[in-house]
Image (cartoon, rainbow, N blue to C red; front, side):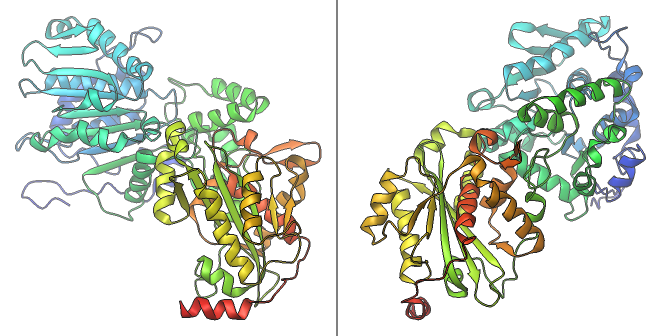
Length: 573
């Protein structure tokens, strides 16, 4: 909180946001800090015309109060007496078609026209050329529709540059990369579609470069605008979204950052209330203006009849439904139960070493291994103290090719490496040796059954089998597990055991991610979870779990011959 004399105090937390959304009230929990400044800038902002809207109304005529309240909060956080912007970062999460581009264009045109700093820079940073056009074109049209602004502001379309003829300050719209933002000294930076930046491995450093000039420009600020991601949030978007949710909920105090997040409460998502068209207004605050109820319902009906990829895009973009564990359409039925299917650290600390001490028998599932794929291993064991409970522990390996070919998931993978649940392979056989090392530990512990101990997808595993045979495994240990609809019993069986608490896991973010990526397809009486359905998202360690479930369902007994000695060795080590 601010403590200087004559400066207002405020909180950007909005713990009653659920009630506000339900009642269609503003999500701004305070009045503008400096109302006179807000009023002056709002007079220009609301007078700007939307040339691509029927009738060419002004922003003030066409936009609902939620948008005006948000922009007023941005403008009203500037202390004209000191030249300081007191709230310096904003995140607006709102569904598509709710005038995000209007906000970007109008707000930055207003700041350019009314700014006082000579030779100032203002920047709209977009992830692609198409998104950049979405901001620049309405900004240029607003200026051309106003004679006074046309005299003041010079437009250079080919450069996506607008210059204030008096102060020589500029507004530039750029499609972002490290080269375009290097050396910028922008006072105000508007970042459009932050979710797409989350897919860029270099986005964090790029944004720091773009906003670095604000250090010497106390009147500056950064504004993030975004819809929800059509994949599980990752990278800088995931980081920002988590931080701003905590600010909104009052878990952390950041008065210089303002979250305005139009999203369904988790309890509504779990209950399926987001599927009721009567609730579409929760994430569409401009409903009845830039987006209509009839249009949304028509899109919803079309999405229901489309394939899963199109359905998912609708839910992410028009209802702001986050793709994650149990919260996406066509999610695996076991996903909602995954998060709570853990055990207390006193029973199992989640490590492999402790797993080998507390289970009476173990089986393994393996899946994946292509050059742009993960190789997933899951161990499944029966708890000695309560054999009804199965414990699941997983690890994955990835070749360097994955970092080259799948840059959209690099940030997620790097996080799993930091957790210790993913290994980045620096040579072509490191993953095979890694899998074999772990399986050899289980074998030497005497925990594998004499037969049907390791379940594999039969395709492309010749090199792995050679490695395992060289380690002392026999044909009896190895078992080809048929995929596709033949995994149905494992998929459904896992769902039930997760729900009744007899399948527990090791609290690994890697597996949370894979479970969140899983999408289902009903084919006849079978429920399919396959890589083809998941698309680009990775689910290999989850398929490995299903392979292991197929073997554990045979009710195996450990071959023995080394458990006690192995435990003694582990403790001694």
